[in-house]
Length: 517
View 1 (cartoon, rainbow, N blue to C red):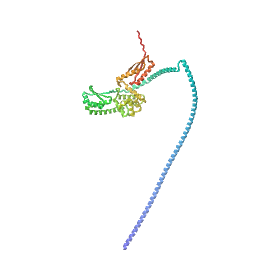
View 2 (tube, rainbow, N blue to C red; view 1 turned 135 degrees about the vertical axis):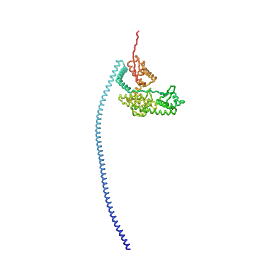
View 3 (spheres, rainbow, N blue to C red; view 1 turned 180 degrees about the vertical axis):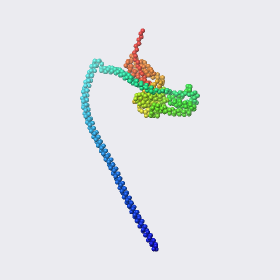
View 4 (cartoon, rainbow, N blue to C red; view 1 turned 90 degrees about the vertical axis):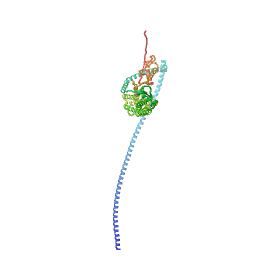
């Protein structure tokens, strides 16, 4: 029992000692924790104070900066206001000066007006006096001459008219001779030099193309059974194929030279291949048409490159290539356009203008002759519309439209293109003219001159380049001869179409014939 009690006492004593030790340790730990917490709190407090101070300093700096900026703006506004005030004062002073000047001038004008009114009164009085004196003088002259005022006036006007007409004609002739002396030589030099520098060969195109074949056997194969191949070829190409008794030849007829060329190339390929039937014909014609279209574009590109012309619209390039297959009066249109372009470039350079623009206008001047559609417009107007459509310069468009005087010329390029077009067409051998049209033009020339009073006979010579007019000596005097030649030339220029120029020579002579017997 005692042992048990001792054990319990020992146990209780050990528990008390353990509690005390634990309590002491815990108390120490709590003290250290509290101390550390106090230190942390103190550190945190100091950090927060520092942060607050720093933030306060930053906000103070920003505030001071903003205040400075506002003060600066206010100062600038005040300066501007002062400047505006100074300017307003200056303007006000200027307006006051102008107002005083206007008032002074107004006073001067009033004084001048008053003086003029007084002078007008004096002038009216003198005018009435002069009219009275003029009337008295007219009555005296009428009594002396035996003519009334109206009769004398009419006679005087008639005399002055004849004298003025004679003097004007003499002056015109003098000016024309002077212009010829000064300008004719230079113009001839420029034109001759231009033509010499740009001499080109001209191809001749017809409305028919002759396709040569080796034998009549090939001709029969082309015709086909019951003419099926011929009909298929005509339907595919749109060209009339004429097979007659002409040996070793087939005639392709059509107004469209592109279609004739497609038909010729397709026939050549079919004959070389040997397979000639409707299906094959359609296939070959389709391929040939594509090849010709590509060649047209290539010809247009090559022409533009050869002439040094850049920036053309692709459609214009295609139309230029299409010119290769078109002829005008027997002259190949592409060769004519190239020739005209080179002539324009040389002439523009001689005259101090832009040669590139002139060359471009010369190349495109007949572009209206090869449109895809056929509107009812002159080719010059149609070419001008096409050039405007594809963004060409206004002066180039005007030169295209004005080269046959359909529109008014607004640039110096227009007369150059017109002249060079005429030079290219008037070159001997460049164009062929139908005999009937040639004879009709000569007859029209002679009949036009015969329509004038006093003309006895007319002779068109030098292939229509010169017109000799014989007038009656008793019906036309020497003064009228000069007027007559000018009037005939003006009428021919306005009413007729002709290549180059026409020289009009009026001849008046008096012959006295006697016979000695």
